[in-house]
Image 1 (cartoon, rainbow, N blue to C red):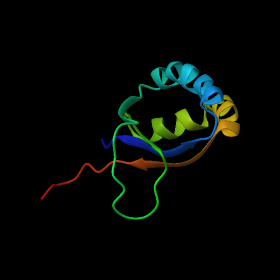
Image 2: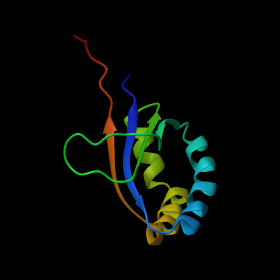
Image 3: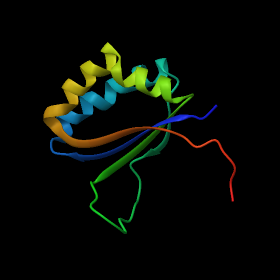
Image 4: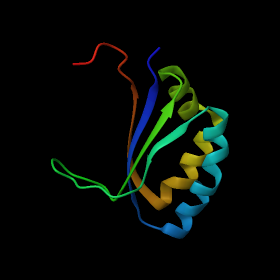
Length: 100
């Protein structure tokens, strides 16, 4: 079964306010079995536009990735994060087929 992923790009405008979101998101992600594959880190934008922070979360499947985002717990966190950051988020199903 293919995994599910969140791919997020974030510009933090108020780090002090954003820290509250970061402090609380771990419990929600743990509840849904999420695993950070990328959490900040160095990057080089080669094409298109970039934001200052990149995050990739892995879930057991696409349905779980959607359920986490749509949960009341995460909805509350979006409201906490909103005033302090601009973000783009894609929830996507992984590829589980043949490789070259």
